[in-house]
Length: 583
Image 1: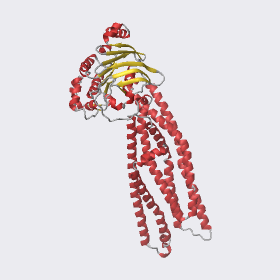
Image 2: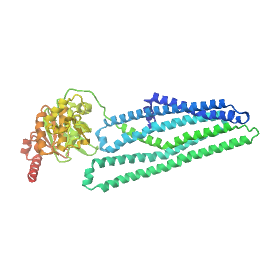
Image 3: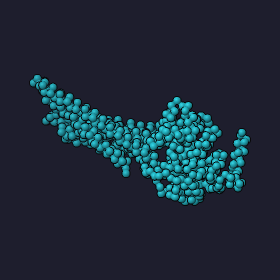
């Protein structure tokens, strides 16, 4: 479906408001165009006649009253038209922003791997704002322009059909000019919107990583990258500016001059003819209507830049909305047992490089499974597959005997929880970060899980306790405190399957001890996967999977693997030797 049709479909959602606005527009334009007719009657019937007969002042005041009446009517309905058109436009864009944001929640994680967050933000904010201008300013200008031009041409036909026909030649000229303009402006606007997304992307990245930039003295490099994008954005804006300057004023000015040459030629010829039937009022009416004719033309031509920018922005918004999404399910299912099975699973992120090769293991309800191995061995990839973030290409993954590829992801994720190595906190309060505004998790439950993970002590020291404000990413809390809150969040949802993604890698020994104690209590009755960095934290695991280059090379508990004197034994000895040296 074309962009224009999709924009029209969004407008249909507010069709009655828009129709009301257009009816008001027609009334406003009709009332406004009565002015020159009234002035013509005033000049020809009363003002010029007053020089010889004394005139009829009562009639003049009556016509002046009519002129004021239609002027007021035009102003009232013009206000109503503008108001309702803006209301409908804001509602349309509200709906569009909701649709595109809601759709981003369904797009698979793989899509976001290749697109910076700043570019997505640009599409949801900047591009939809440009589309809003389409409905508010561009639509209003073009609709009112078309109605005004049509009304003025009708009025000119009433006055003199021959001159009206001459003036009608302006319409196809204007149409051809618009087509030519859009041909060049489309390419410039696509580059401008693309560069604006790049600028937003580098800004988002720079602000998020400002500490790293300053520590490693990357300010100059970052500045050069930003300047390159900004310079290209400026260059294309400059090209579009030249195009706009060449089309707007020059086009309307040229057409206006041609029209007035036609008037001089036509009325001059009539005056020199034997009939000399041209009145001063008629001449005034023609000049007034022609001046009014070029005002909407000027507005329409000047809005071509916004029109083209809005169309390009709409293309980018719809491109995001056209990305295949996953169906969200509100369906609830009984709590899972937590039996997880991988059978000969192979997986690749890009379809070429296999990162998991024939992975097979079985985790029973209540077991703790540890995944160990060097960076890039496939530990996190196993969890990505289990969560359904990426589709596996071979084998079968089941939860309680059901293959996850045949299940709705929202349904089985409801029974899964995760604690990341780098915990993420949302803007809000401590309480909302634990229950994520889920009404089923009461304040008493929040207090319970916080106490279970040992977070109640530091929260008790906060001024507002559970209502303490959490800034973006929890920047006012230490890494260990953020980790405890993240751990409490997972426990509050009581998952059947709990994943700890190197959850103790970045915290101090004392906090690690607190989490370990809490974990021993809460992991009963749930299957727990631990992606381990510190091997000391997994000695009590029921199974330890040792991965190397996407394959399971060893499997067993701590004692069994240590007895084999294999890779796990080497890793364990090496790590403890390093810790002794550091100590």
